[in-house]
Length: 335
Image (tube, rainbow, N blue to C red):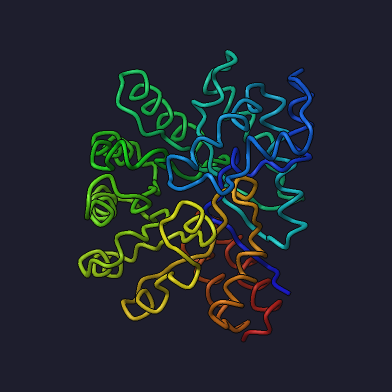
């Protein structure tokens, strides 16, 4: 049994459970859907063949996050569910601009999200995601997201992110925005190497993210056949947030055993194991480790090592990191 777990790459909207979804819908006076109906609009099934297909499943959960009360409740519900799954720390990412459709300001959205945090349930931090897109409104909202992340940095928000369709919008397109993030002093992690818009673009996307100053890379899998990517990740001490079942769901890899863990280890590249979108994929972090255990015969000591790496590369405070390390070592019997 796996416990003392840490998830660094988890999307709020993609991880709203069935029970939570029904509760949030009722709070917004939305039509009541059966569990089967919710599954049909939120779970990526056999019709999911790419990242773009996968992203279509976010429409309904995003619609549940349009009031301050539902945003706060969604995060608090999630913390309870994660604690019950054996987590001791999580970094939750969400795009504030996607919760402004009902009239909320970005400040109201972020403050509502922060209000959902509760260290007594589970220590957690928030990562504010920018969204890929090209029109002027998206640019301004992304810029505003960075400014609001700066405003609440250290008050529940710890970093920024870039999410969305990598096949339509290249990572390099956002160089100006993340130069602004560096100017503001907002650390950031970027989704990259999750899909290819042209042949070989997976590697370029990761290299672009590295050159822009990302401190961690979300996924990165499609860039790992390029020795330059491995070298840059290792030399700059940039870790990957690997999400095994998500990578299968979006057809980045065919099976879990295709994950290049041996390549990463030989290259000296750090990585953590994460869920990405629990509801959409139909997983939990405990399931992810169970799958890895069955597929790669990883030992409890190796699991502990992965979790300790997650602590090292997390945005948790140094005091919290010390506590997390102690819990992991105690749970897995490590020195």
